[in-house]
Image (cartoon, rainbow, N blue to C red; front, side):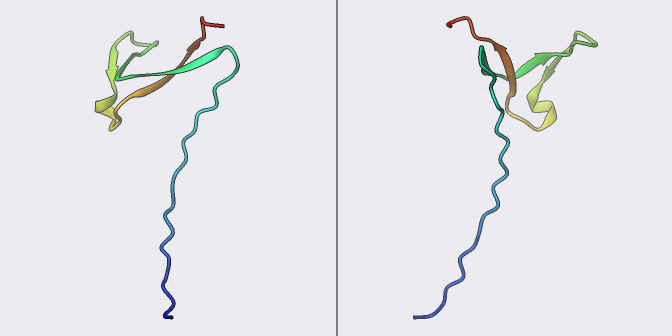
Length: 58
C-alpha cells in the first residue's frame, strides 16, 4: 500500500468559559459603554458578539 499523507487541519479554538451563575448569549449588535453607540458585529467581520449575562433560572 502506498503511504498517503494525512492533512492535518489546524482548528482555532475560541471557547469562552462560562462562570457559574452566568450564561452566554449571542447578539448581532452591542452598545458601546464609552460612547453609547450601537455597534454591529458585521462591521467588525463577525456574525454575532458573545455576551455573558446573569443566569436568572437558577
